[in-house]
Amino acid sequence: MSSTEQIGSSGKNELRKSVPAHEEQVHADGSTDVYDNSPLSVFLSTFKAARTQWVARQVIIIISLLFRLGVGLGPYSGFNDAPMHGDFEAQRHWMEITLHLPMKKWYWYDLQYWGLDYPPLTAYHSWLLGYIGKIINPDWFALESSRGCENENLKSYMRLTVLVSEAFIYIPAVSMFIRYVIREHGLSPLNHSTATAAILLQPALILIDHGHFQYNSVMLGLTLLGITNIFRGRLFLGSIFFVLSLSFKQMALYYALPIFAYLLGICVKPRLNFLRFISLAVSVVLTFGVVFAPLLLRDGFNFAAALIQLKQILLRVFPFDRGLWEDKVANIWCALNTFIKLRELYSQKTLQRLSLAATLLVVLPVCILLLVHPKKKALVWGVSASAWGFFLCSFQVHEKSVLLPLLPVTLMLADSPDSNTQSFIYWINNVAVFSMWPLLKRDGLALQCVATVFLWNWLMVSVAKLPKSFFGKLIILLSYAAIGGLCILEATIPTPTQYPDIWVVANVTLCFGCFSIFTMWNYMQLYKACVEKS
Image 1: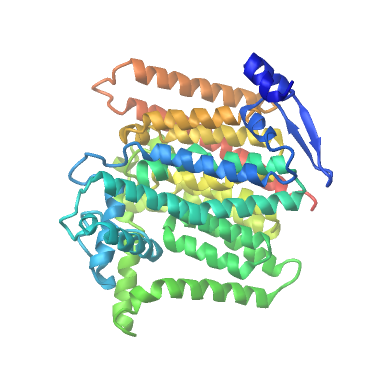
Image 2: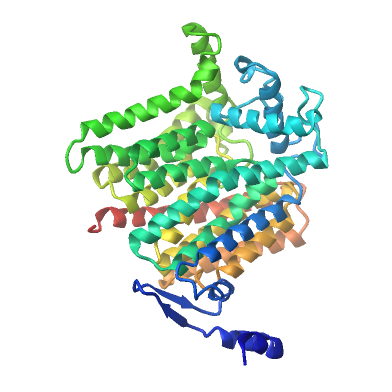
């Protein structure tokens, strides 16, 4: 009897029989794929006859795009929330002003209404998308009169721009990184397909870019292209991609110090390579020059005007006047503020200095380790540790910024087949999504949040197991119990009028504790990667 007939006659029980609990396939190159009863393995077993599983990965990419389209059917940041609306309106407004105003006015125009506050590459990206959208319907981006536009066709177009941007930059970058890692470590095609699914179906990025509405995938994709090219020895190209990432969103600075330390390390070890150092410096300066030149030299070589324009861009990009934070976020400052009212006790300048000192205290050891031990695997852990340090300690952090430390962390699902490592990575991804729950709930994305988290964990159930150590199991189980308990309390108990932020504060405190524990564990992995013999 064929497998199809078995399924048709006996249902789910026969499906389990058609895919044994641990069915192995050994390839000609010696690599082994192990199929179990998990949903992902059952799916991949369909393609087990193929040596490379190329088709499986393409199907996974298509499924990941469908996930994004499904989330995009829901509401977005600021939907029906006049007068400022939200991030959706901010992105649309930037398309509007870059289309209709000369470049020299982009960073000066009506700053109280979503003034442009990202680096120039975001502005150029907005202009391109606005230009294409204007061809379809000029009313979507008419200067001033289009403010607050919530047309359904506009929503569809804007959602599509995020999807296309991700498909052209982030998804190819992920595929390139995984392909490099799989070949470098001699891992099997199943590892390749599993890692592709785990990274592309990660809920956090899908919910923020395709639900809340942003273009974080462009910045993350450019960063990943930079790291992958650095791994491949294409240092000049890698530094160009990373500068482009910085030029798209300033939050890529979370990665800058460890990447600089690693590149400097390989310039001086095992011996000084002055030519390499000069070529990297030239690539950085030239890339920044090309990105900023159209804005700074719009009026010709007028040094004074260019300096004024550059100062205004930097003031918009680094908004220190907004305070230590806007919305509550799971970092040290919001967690401490539950017990010590920092903004009432200290001036803004003092808080800036405290933030800078705390961030450097956490990040500088990472840089020292990478400078002394510039190893490829250590770089990924170092970038992750640095990003967690910035997220936990730096000035003016948003909930969405957790996407930055999540990128290198999640990449380790491809680079490290160790089950304990994977357990902690899946755990922190789930905690990170929960840390954004107040934001997603406010945006009306509760259903999308629950659905994507459930589907991701269900799909990865075979690899997202508990760690072997008792302490690791205890941390993960207790944190999940606390998250579940907090969700039940929030759903069943009315918010006390005297404590309107009680659930948000509880969320912040719990997630901060989890992030702190993970950061310390991340440091341990970094140290191991640095000192282990190559």
